[in-house]
Amino acid sequence: MKTLAKPARAARAEAELAEAVRPGQSVELLKALHILTREGRLNQDSRRKLKQVYHLFQFIEKLLRELPAAGAQATLADHGAGKSYLGFIIYDLFFKALGGGRVYGIETRGELVAQSKALAMRLGFERMAFLNLTVAESADSPELPAQIDVVTALHACDTATDDAIAFGLAKQARFMVLVPCCQAEVAACLRETKALALARTPLAELWRHPLHTREIGSQLTNVLRCLLLEAHGYQVTVTELVGWEHSMKNELIIARHTGQRKAAAAQRLRELLSQFGLDALLETRFRLPA
Ligand SMILES: C[S@@+](CC[C@H](N)C(=O)[O-])C[C@H]1O[C@@H](n2cnc3c(N)ncnc32)[C@H](O)[C@@H]1O
Figure 1 (cartoon, rainbow, N blue to C red):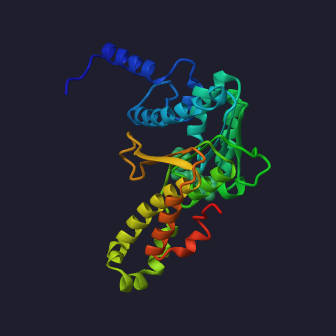
Figure 2: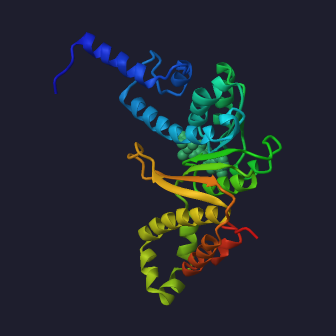
Figure 3: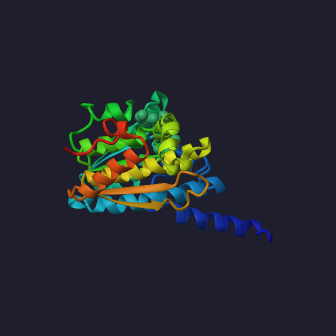
């Protein structure tokens, strides 16, 4: 491959940087999130990371703009926030200039919550809050409002995505944006009832081998989540989070509240749980509206 001369390389780096950093965007934030190097440069890894974050932000921004006052007073809760880079990017690119709205990051790791709090304070991002809670606890926390407009959960571990859905339902979220991680609960239930299922139906061949149990469990979990959301009055779209190719977990579920509870989805969910020997989950994980 032909190597560029030094001035040409520098010019290209400048052009890439100008393209990556949007007008008004905090360079300090991008450095703190290690998207930019200390010298304010992009590297191969950070270029990819930024592309991914922007891609997801693009979906979320569109939804925020649909809210009253084009999202100027919107509330957003990000579950399993980790270092909160998603929340920070959303705040920086959307809420900062609006002078309204609020972002909550919910995370169980205390040190990450403390880091995010310190960074938000340093940057003057005063309408960001970070709560050291589990997703499940956050649904009843007095530190959160009774209603939240947008719920996000990006690779929140295991059943944290399910808890985020329960949170969204309890908070009458207008939108939920979910990129699930691996979920072990359904696979564990499939494993428990495997022998019985094999005697009952040839379909159980789909999860006889342990690897398939995990894969089917994961696939089935997301299908059940979508049906649950539809049964509770959400319209659901499932797409691939492009640019996340390096991750196995790139399924993007977007749920939009319409208020039309789909009885057919509720029925399908019941039937699927029954077919897979998972009826117990109807009382715990996949509670249908009364
Ligand atoms: C894979 S990381 C993803 C972090 C971030 N969303 C991202 O995409 O960069 C998952 C995060 O969820 C947190 N987490 C796991 N279970 C949780 C729970 N039940 N409640 C809140 N946070 C949880 C973990 O501590 C971890 O920081």
